[in-house]
Image 1: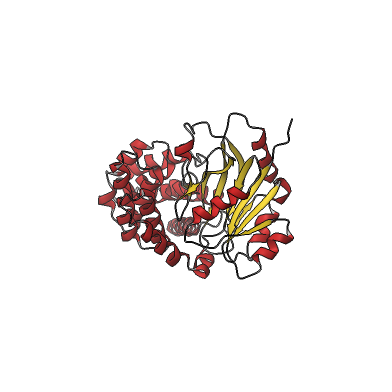
Image 2: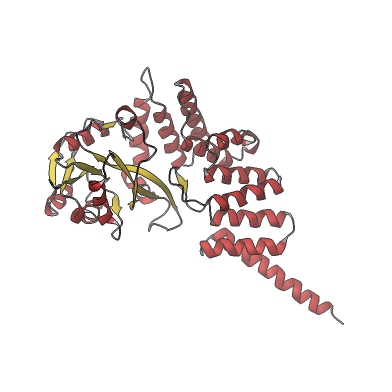
Length: 382
């Protein structure tokens, strides 16, 4: 039987900070490494070659998909793994990537993508998780589309993705840590490209979503809401159910602007579409808490704990199915003056996230109140 092979494909420009770590994390488990360089002026190409990669120049034309597709053309493998230079495959799991070569009657597979956010170094509780299509069979027509935030054309080529396997391999993405986005001016670059892409006669609804995401990253929540709403409308106009992450972004932006009346009860319609999406149930709980519907909020947060946060079919913020509901349950119980239940909830949050600042402060505050109450009771004894 002919040995099947796996090709790694990456596009780069001035990635000397990241490229060694990225390639080193996976080079033992791929048969070739294809680097498409779109105009580096640093040591990126030299570092890649020193690690055994083939480097191909592709003059930048303002289109990420075309650069990635050039890499596919150069790849000889039966399967392709695609990564970004600012990503790293988990060292303990990288060998599982080759399991894709043994899959039959399957043309695409997922990994677990972990997107870190916030300050550096990466914090284990500040991340988003998602099952992401990163491995696909070569030479069956799969390629990338979209000038920015490019995606595989799976809907055009594959009929059914319901049984897409997940190899369980974690891939860590560092590109949206704050110091990286500042140093690369990602917001200005991305927004300029996205606004240009939105000018077509038949706009892709994903473009408005990505514009909304860019505004969300710079904390401009009114513009986030405006553009994610446009995206939802455009999907509906195409008679396509808006993807779950649009509703996540919509209600996150409403909460962050304090628009609880605007979010309730509309979020129930989103939950009806995606009843097992824990993030939406968490936002529902926050909305109800801020509307002083405490019993209903408690029910929502308890439901989050029951759902957990391991359904990677959705873009899920870590904590919304674990330590965050416990913290907010503490807030609910305080409003009900159930001090012991509140303290126990904060303790449960801290057990799962030991440096959770709000839960830590709340737990210490209730502990001091409890101590003061005991002392006052002792002083009142005859």
